[in-house]
Length: 100
Image 1 (cartoon, one colour):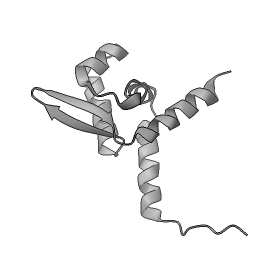
Image 2 (cartoon, rainbow, N blue to C red):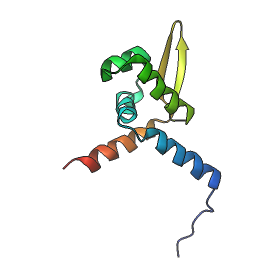
Image 3 (cartoon, helix red, strand yellow):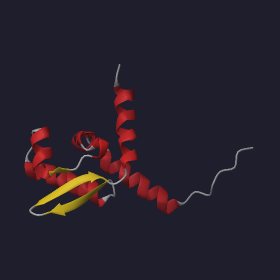
Image 4 (tube, rainbow, N blue to C red):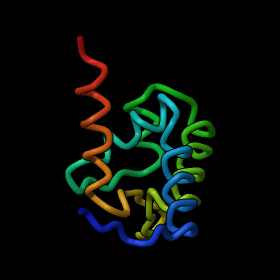
């Protein structure tokens, strides 16, 4: 018989909120650009995605607020990166699951 660890409701809530934050096409694209330990600025991300800088900042704020991303200030620039590199596996899984 398999034993299950007691479910920690608080941790499950955090995980669900992280997934909700990731559940947007542009946010998935942002995560894809940050794979492999990359650190990018808002400007670099908005240029890659060809969306408004304010929209990019909004999406980055949501991802950071829910614990998906971290930021690091260097001079005038703020660089964003995945808080946990293993999150890129979720993006990879989604890519695999949506390919025909």
